[in-house]
Image 1 (tube, helix red, strand yellow):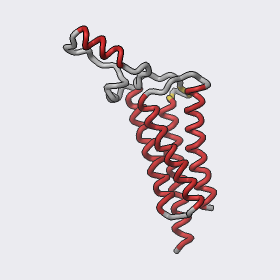
Image 2 (image 1 turned 45 degrees about the vertical axis):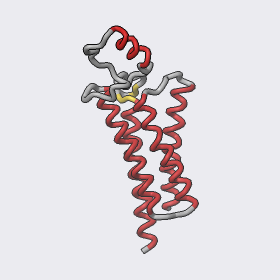
Image 3 (image 1 turned 90 degrees about the vertical axis):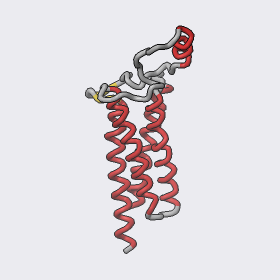
Image 4 (image 1 turned 60 degrees about the horizontal axis):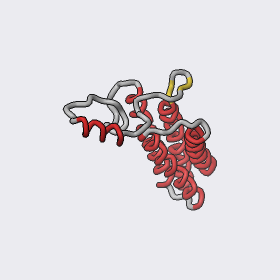
Length: 156
């Protein structure tokens, strides 16, 4: 049972990654910095899942859950940036110009990323991709923890 749960959780992260790449390359929606950050823990979860299937160590499902919780946290943070609840990283949101010279302003404009973290390029049922990632990743974390609990109970 724990192997099935691990497979489901790691396949879930792989599916979310494939979806993100699909939006990027097929849907031509370039990701922002926070979108990219959300991908790394999913990649880690896929690797952890492969390791856990090869060597069923009790720590691995907990690490998978940690990876899922990490991407859920980044997704929730990104959702807050998109909704204007808090500011995002200066490198991917708009902000005041301040006391910049025209040369400094031009340098800032030319080095600014093309995709902003505080704009929602796609949504479903009023939830952005970041919001859906947070929700799905929390579900994946629950599956990882269930796998760990199943492994722990069967070893005692």
